[in-house]
Every structure is written in structure tokens, then in C-alpha cells.
Image (cartoon, rainbow, N blue to C red; front, side, top):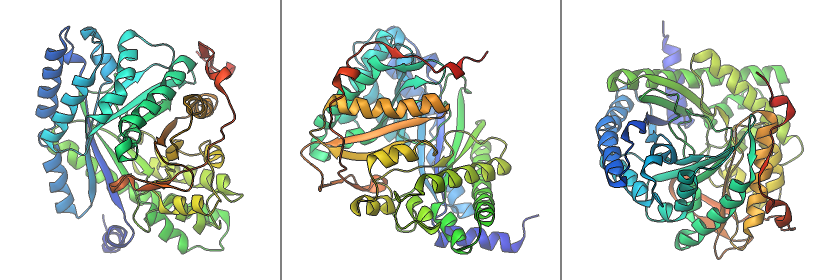
Length: 452
């Protein structure tokens, strides 16, 4: 039985502490849209998306009004286009990206993800053609997000793909340089990408999923920070219990929304992704949580340990609140979307190298990092390779969303707007790694991955 104090507690979380359901994401299978004719393929995609998702936004808004729970984004993820479109033998997939964008606008969602390829072991012609289409596709669309999985703990790292992705990111930056290279903010490269992630830019609909499914991402950094204010100077046991209990309460809100959305849409419920995802809003920061634990700035000694503690307790609280916790689930550490992270960079406390160390213990990796536009493609590929290695060796998801802002250098600021916020240009280690990156083939999987 729900007691009055629990209702009041949740209301306070929403009204004063920035608790929200960050996204309802409908995953849609497009494999049955396959055709040897790309125009027929595109038309089938448009028809299926607009039919399956026609009520997604309205039902999300109805649930939000009835329960008083903010639902910030309504999104769609689709089967990786490189798989669904392979039968077309298309030279590029820009027209498909435009159809995805048109469908997203028709149903009113914020983003549509799945302009994607899974190339962790090798690339088919379809996958390579899709990857080479990314710069143009992201420059001529508004709502399309793209991702490429280049590594896994089972197969190793496809270094041919890593090298190509460095070039693709730089070209995407050039094509959108009039908007501070924002195209790169809609692209992410993964190791061990999950099939059920509702968060952009990395969301796609895995081939083992239902035909259509609802996944929900819930977030509440401000709620966790407020809870920790009540246990200053307490020991680690109290700290951990406070985070765990708070994560439980946050997840229950997401569970309620997910079940309602599933029932009203007549679509199976997939997973709750409990990822503490910040926004530019004051009081909605992962960095502030870590500082509340006792750090002057994120990046100070002890930061990685504090983040490990936070991530683990969030997961422990979340899995007790829902039987189906999945996606990424944990703490995101993007720079541009978190004012506390931005402050740490400006203070000189936080560097790319420290962010890389932090990514060993958190949900994703190097996220929304702006770097000088003059950074070489091999350096970008080297940064990606390092992050992929962390994921491969540690059997975890890691990702890189990095933005070489054309025409800007260290000391400048890139402006992205909305939830993407703004980002100071960060210093990059420019010592040459091209001879390593230009080797062909793949880095093999670690020996401890050989389990059958």
C-alpha cells in the first residue's frame, strides 16, 4: 500500500530535485522491411515507423499529465540500418537517414536512433557504406542519431573500423562546422553496445528483441545529491545505503511509467535503464554528487573511487526495484551536459586522461567532449582505441562521443543548445600515434574472454 509520505516524497523529488523520466523509447524491428530496391525499403520503413509509433508522443504526454511525472523525451530506436538495408546493395544510406528523419518528424519524437552498424569483428559492404554515409546523413537531418560498435570482449577491436571512424568524425565535424560541429554530438562509437539502450545517440533495436518494445530511461542526479546532503560526515556504509535506497525510489517511478506506456500502447515492456544522466540545469549534475561526497572538484584524487561507489550503489538499488533493469544503467559523465563537469574543466581539475580513468567504473565513457578542430584523425582514432580497450578487457560497455570543433581551440567554448548544453574545448595529447593506428586488422580478444 502506498502511504501519503511516499507520495509527498516523490512529489518533492519531481518539484524540487529534478527527478524525471528522461525518455520513453520505442524500439522497432525493421528486418521485415528488407527489399532489393532502396526506395521500396525506405517506404516500408516510413510506413512501419509511422504506424507503430503514431500514438507514442500522445500517450507519453497523457501519462505525464495524469501522474505528474515529467517525461522529457519520446524517442524511437530501430534495427541497425546496415543490417536491415543490406539487401538493397546501396552505395550509401543518406536517403534512408532522410526517411528516418521524416518519420521522426511525422510522429513527433525528439530523436530516432539506429543509423548504425555492428562491425566489432569485420565489415560487410553494407556496413562500410553506412559508415561512409554518416557525415552527410547527420548534416542533412535533424533528429537522426548514429552509432557504430567496433569492439567486444568476445571478438576484440576492429582497428580498421576504428581508423575509418576517426576520418568519419572529422568529416562530420567539417560538414556541420557552421553549428560548432554538432553532427558529432549525434554520433557515438561503442565497445560492447547493448541491444536495449533507450538513450541517444547510441540507441538501436537489437536483433534479439521483440518486433516492437518499450524501454524507459529514468534519471535523478538532483535527487541523489539532495539525499547525500543529509549524510555529510557519515561513514561509507551510510553513504552507500543512502544512494541505494534513493536509486530504488527513482527506479520505481520509471517502472510505473514503463508499465503504463506498455499497457496503453499494447507493446511489450523491455527494460528500465537507470542511468543518472545530467542536464545543463543547475542541480542536475553528476559532478555535484561526487563533490557532495567530499571532492573539491571532479578530477581530484579520489574521483574514480567515488564514481565507482556511486555507480555500484545505483545498480544495486535499481535491480531491487525492477526485474528488468538493462540498457546502460549507472552514471553518465558527459562534459557538455553537466555544469559541474564544465566547472571542473575550467578549473583545470578535469582532463581527458582523468575522464578515461573514470570511464573504467561508470556506465559509458568519453561522452560529449569537445576538442580542438585541428586534432588529427589518427589522434581521434587513438582516443577511441584506448576507450574500446577498457571496455573489451573489463567486459563492460564503453563509448566515445567526441567533437572536434572546427575553427576552435583550447580556451574557446562550443555551443550546442538544449539538453546538449555547451562545452569548453579540452586539451588533447597530440603526440603522434599514426603508425599504430595505420596497422590493419584487429586487436584480438583477451584470453579471459574465451568462455564456452
